[in-house]
Image (cartoon, rainbow, N blue to C red; front, side, top):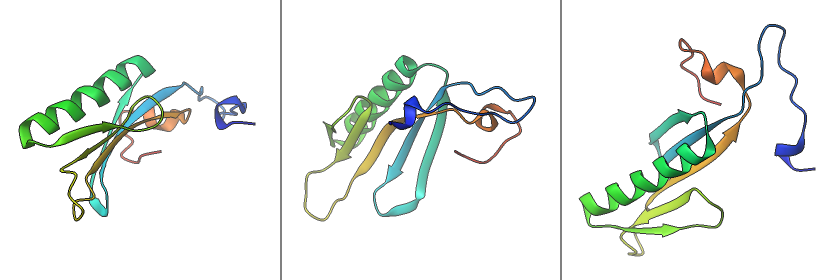
Length: 105
């Protein structure tokens, strides 16, 4: 059974609402982390692709699409450069959608 096929049980008073995270990380750099929320997969995938293309254009880097939609590696293609990863992840945790919540899924 895939993760997306599992039923979700939300705590009383909280409905599980599918949403999507666009997560950007510097490979090997735990401090370089960004997480944005989108209500639709289409919006999230468009944002991920646009962000990857923009970063590559500004910094004269290359964008490589990875397996699966919404996954991009931004790199110089040199051996010592691990690059940055931008990817779309689905989520059902209603706590992510609360305005005062600082934690990530």
